[in-house]
Image 1: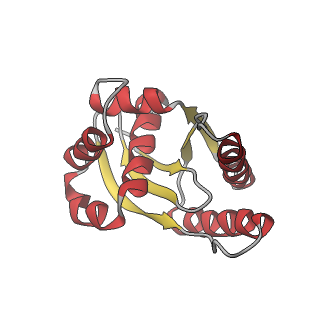
Image 2 (image 1 turned 90 degrees about the vertical axis):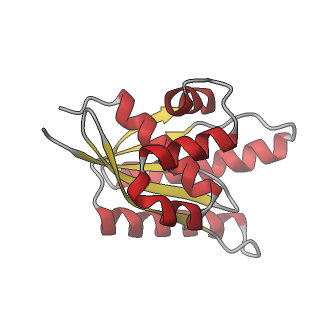
Length: 164
């Protein structure tokens, strides 16, 4: 059965989570995960460039075949939503430059896919990611919430993409 290496990305301007899985039609295996942390003292343009540069390094290292990216949700603050959108745009462009096909998923779709509930809590998502990827549990716990969310995006992309 063919497998596909998938990159999941949880965008953020302060912390962007990333996670890599190897997926088949019936299973997924943990490969790696982590956090990209742009310099918060840098200008917005520099931070966006840092996101791009670091994501390109991850893509070069792990050679994913496709990627999933979480869609932007609207915050109470319009300014925060705009900044998140800019970070997401830089990441989306970076994935496109790398030649990856990209699936975009709403937070509720990700939660429903991973937990079975569209209103699943962060704790439920974290528990299910570690349950579905048990061989990476220590690395996943160490990497933190944003990396777990990125792995949830990768799992969602695996569920919605055609793995043949």
